[in-house]
Structure formats: structure tokens, C-alpha cells
Image (cartoon, rainbow, N blue to C red):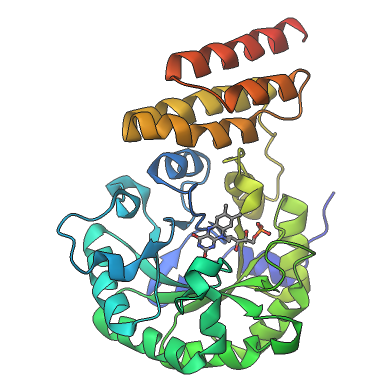
Length: 338
Ligand SMILES: Cc1cc2nc3c(=O)[nH]c(=O)nc-3n(C[C@H](O)[C@H](O)[C@H](O)COP(=O)(O)O)c2cc1C
């Protein structure tokens, strides 16, 4: 039996307000490059009908000359609320890209100021903006001016342990017009290692008036509740916990709304979901979808007898038929062992 404070109960009973936008869920699906395409989001949406979902990050200046938007910006009319995430370091390109994102159907535009990848930071984007707060401010101001949907920022607590500047940085983002801040509570130097430092989320929550979304190590309902109690954050965002498990956001949302545990999917349900994912990728992306499906399928194949062997074979899958056959074999085996 989980104990929840009265304060948290009340918070969970009210919608999340991002500027003028009301979102009826306080658990969000994070942007994940190479993962949160339309196909993955459809699966998440099935279990979390009211949560805010994010596209993969989109390189803003790459949109400057193109007539047709890249597939990663494509949004289903039914999948709202949806945020399109952009990255770059040039305010004018970001503003222009944000206009395109809104035309595509984005309910909010999120600016990535947290990506640790060298290729991005050496060009001034992602988490390197933590070291250039004036440019980050200018970016937010330009994008806010360009679009009439809320502009939000996702960032980290600092560049490294010697440069944890999130409190000043977050305030600057709010003052520049950001309507929500998602904080991945690690430094850039940490990458994805070590524990997320939720104490910084609490401190950021204390200095800001806009909603603060806690991100980092939200892998379960318990973690989500503990994080909200400890930090006072306005919501949680799930990331790696959803790899091969698009049920997580829905599970947490269900608990937030009902106070009851949703029974976790059975092995067979997870494997059926893997097949749906594979078929979706094939239909949406063709051959490329099959190659991309391999990592997803490997993530699904864990936690049951024979999972290791299945995983090895799924990482080499060449076609939908082959993938489905392998998964069907595992389903039969699971049912026979019940
Ligand atoms: C494969 C992968 C891709 C990611 N892509 C993005 C991205 O496109 N945009 C972004 O803001 N963060 C991205 N992130 C960071 C996550 O959204 C999240 O901030 C981070 O994983 C911390 O949460 P966790 O500890 O729950 O995984 C990515 C992380 C992973 C593992």
C-alpha cells in the first residue's frame, strides 16, 4: 500500500498547465532519438491517452531549405497532446523551424538544451547551451516570438560537477518566456551514468514559477511517486524505462489518476506488442523500419525463459514474417509452459 501526501494527491487531481495548454496527465513520454517515432508513440498513446508525447529531436537548421518536412516531424492528428522537439544554436533557424512544427500540429515546441552527444555539443547545440546562457535566452525569446503555442525547454543540471548552473539557467529560461522546464537531473559529463540527482529538481522547483518536470531514473510507479514527493515537481517524464516497454507512461498515469495499480502486461502481451511494433515500423518505413526494429525487438525480449536466445535472433531479423515467426515461437513456448 503506497502512502501519498495530501498535497501530492491534490496535485495529481489537477491538470498540468503549460502556458494556456491544459494537459490531463502528469506523466510525459520523453523525446528519444531513434525511438519515439510515430510508430512507437502510437503504442505509448494506446496506454496513455492523455499524456504529452514528444517527437525525436529535429535539427532546426536542416529544415531551412527543405520543402517537405522530414518524417521524424510527422504527427498524427489523433496523437495530441504532442510536442515537437528542436535542437540547434541559432535563434533564427529555431524560430523558423518552430513555425513549421506548429503548422505540422505541435501543441508545444520544446528546445533541446540537454543532449550530451559530441556531434551536437561541438556545434553549439544540446547541453552546450548550458555554457552559453545568453544564446539560450535569445533562442527562447526568438521562438516565443515566432509561435503562439507554449515554448518549453529540456535541459540538464549543468555541464559537469564544477559547473552546475541550473538554478541561474532555469530562471533565465523562465524570464525569456519558457512555459515549462524539464530537468534531466544529471550533468552533461554524467551522460546517462550514475543516479539522477533529484535534489537539483527540488531546488529548481523552488526558484521557478513555471512547471518543472522531473526526468531521470523514472522506471516505475514507485519511482515516480517518490520523485514527486521528494522534489515537489509538477510531473515526471519517463525515458529509458520505456525502451521495449511502451506501457510505462500509461501505468504511472493510471496510478496517478486512480490510486490503483494497473496489472502489468503478461509476457504474451509484451510479445504481441513487439509484433505490433515491428509491423508498424515495416508499414511506416519499409526496409529501413526492419533494421530499426532490431534494437526495439531486443529490448522486448527479456525477462522470460529463452529470452536471451530470442534476443540474439531478433537482432538479425530480415523481414516482418521472420520476426513474427520468431516471436510466435516464443509466445507458444510461454503458453505451453503456463
Ligand atoms: C536512446 C536515447 C535517445 C535520447 N534522445 C533524446 C532526444 O532526442 N531529446 C532529448 O531531449 N533527450 C533525449 N534523450 C534523453 C532522455 O530523454 C532522458 O532525458 C534521459 O534518458 C534521462 O532519463 P532516464 O534516466 O529515465 O533514462 C535520449 C536518451 C536515450 C537513452
